[in-house]
Image 1 (cartoon, rainbow, N blue to C red):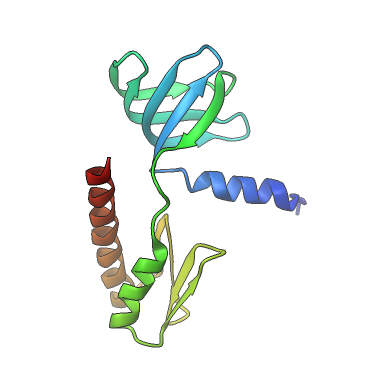
Image 2 (cartoon, helix red, strand yellow):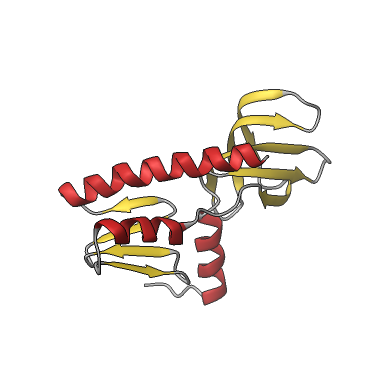
Length: 148
């Protein structure tokens, strides 16, 4: 097993939360792209963006940016409010919901885990939570779009 220092692990963990979010990417050539982060290659940080608009107003369905040209990656949307979702779950599963803000994690009945990335777990309860989470994220994003 290889050792990964805490700072590197934390960077990777934080950066992975940018997935499926709107980002602004600035390049060393002076170009700027705003799009949905679909994926990245580590460690060079080459990026795949979807629904992209560049600084000249051009729109593209997909753009791949080589990590050699990336100078900045800016998260353009607020992180998901997991505390709000935890409160919603607490109303349905009283005394069975734990929210860990430092880990950005919710657990339900100590079996089902919820992060910004989704719901982990199986069975009818997990399926119900998955449906609720999908609706919550959709509603949350719509509220954010109205603010912009």
